[in-house]
Length: 536
Image 1 (cartoon, rainbow, N blue to C red):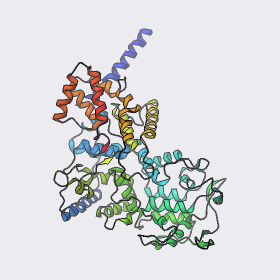
Image 2: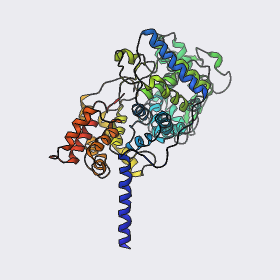
Image 3: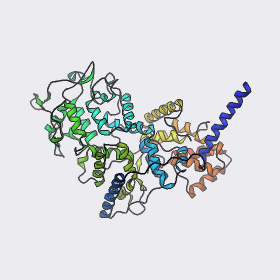
Image 4: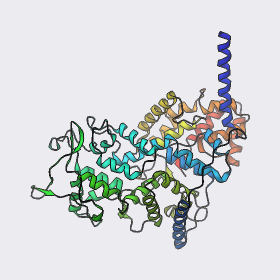
């Protein structure tokens, strides 16, 4: 019996090594990867309209667009934008099994059906919806909120329905996670508000996150730059004036919404109203339900555009219109914004469809550096893909994934997923979180570079270990050239160019330090390269 157990153990080890080795070399046989069906006619028409709108703008301004990027570069962008990490070496090999013309369509479908997509995008949305802080502990459960939002995104529930739930749901925040959108505004230490939701903060969240307008700038006075009056904001906030929290959780109560005059200090009653498109507002019903209908209405001039702008920013690292929560600040937004918003509204506010369309445009698939025009000029007009610094969790996720030949996803062992969760959180704490304002374009810092160069995560992932990429490449790569290719694909999602190949091959050939140490040094150098920490 003991002999049989030993034989089985050895067999399992050999099978595992064979599976690892299969990822180090191009796949030439085995089960064919499924190819997705072609998009419908309306889908292609929208992509064409967006491409033509950008092309017209480039021609008008005399800008030469960048050349198309290669498939692996675009796949890396998609993976970072939708899952917060780079593709694994295993995924790259699967992708390269397909005919070149089918690879990106398959890759988009692959990611949209991966739970990592829902989890990552839910967290990105949650930063705008409820912020990054833990909030009032008694009344708020951020983790439960994000998990609920991820589940809704995973089943591709229409986005307008999700937003209506956020505004209108009743119940306990532990049982009805959507109500955390309301309860996060409670200030337990504010005796004057008596542990009740804040209509002013809710109005600000709704207008910025769902409509892309800074109506809350008119909270204390008329808006200094836009045509919004103080009364417009107060009327909007009044829709939350009857929102209460009690033993049965969030519910609609009764009463009037009052605001205190800053000069006389007297209170006055404010009636709920919207300043624009008032014909879209239902006459009857609970106040929050009426507001939710107006916010998500197909005819609302801001809802679809704000959503498109945010999804574009998540995918590309920069919004079409900056700042992301102030669409009115841009006098002449790109025509593509209106085209995409119209398609989004007409097709049931389908997030997955919107992502597919954006990812299919020329603007998304261009190289990041224009060889024909100034980079700054081309990037500003989306004639080239913008160079953007990776977010802290993207850096952490990419380091962790680069150190594993196999894909770390929902199918991975529980221990692997728990380790990834802990390692990523620890890294982000040390590296620094970008907070609520995640598209402010802040540059990197010296402490962040030191965390990458000397930090615990990179050191552990670089060192030899039975499950690390460096060890597997050392054991399983047939020669130095294939080892170098595997290291570049695992970290930078590309193959080395001639100069890099010559340089690093000579480094690996130097046996004075040992092949294993040479592989570790190359992995460390690639992870610490500028290219690794930027989306391009």
